[in-house]
Length: 143
Image (cartoon, rainbow, N blue to C red; front, side, top):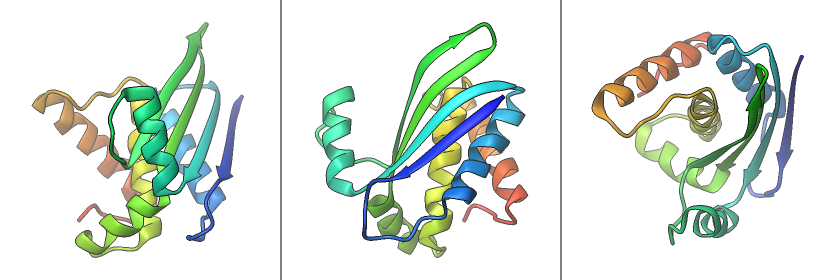
């Protein structure tokens, strides 16, 4: 069973919770994860800055955070946190909607939950390909 809960903890931007939940489900399917409980929190820039400092000791805001809480007996529990403010700012540079940028963040963070990494060039290429594959399922292409 897959359970995805999306919580909107910011008020500046309209959020499509069903779309974000669907993105998580598509990533889990890609990773052949059949049992999971995933929470997605959409936050503002200030909260993201605070969380990034609290959990990673990085004193700046960021696009997304992800945490594997438990992964035992083929059951994944994880948390994804994405910044709507960051997505709004970055979307202007890439020429697409804030909603599309936020969707990319949810996909990216969810890929981390299933084991993708983006520290080495070869890993980055694999992650970008997986992002591209999931975005295509929504009729989107990364710019």
